[in-house]
Length: 165
Image (cartoon, rainbow, N blue to C red; front, side, top):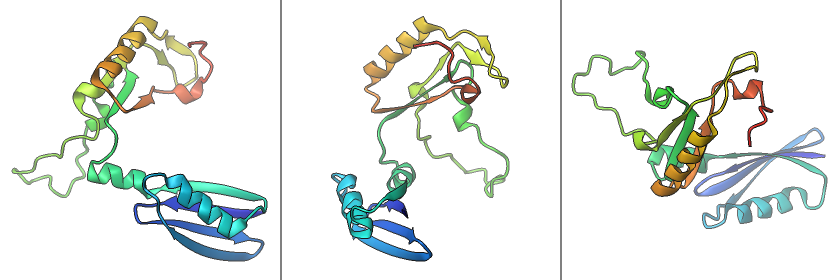
């Protein structure tokens, strides 16, 4: 089996692979209109029809965040935690710069939604999800024409089967 790491970047799509005890590197030009084309081309070159395990990462996503060129993104989280994504820390090099202004956040405040409902760290349901609020949020996302949505509920990993649909 060949293990292949793929990084889809804006200019190049890079492949690092291991076949047995041998390591290799391969690079192709990225295809921004359809990144899968470059990925498939590189996988074909590196492994052909051989059995392979693929691990994928993308600097395209990182660059989109850094350059503020990503999709219009919304955030859904627990009610009361909508702004936690923007709260800063005091370990900043510009702590005493009176002229400092934060860059606009990647998720605008009007694209952040909180819904009642909660899971404890033990996985037990603390407060049932408010389905009516969830439907209102979905309508709000449509009205705002959100292009992507991050759903981040506290301790949701501890209970993946709450019975909500």
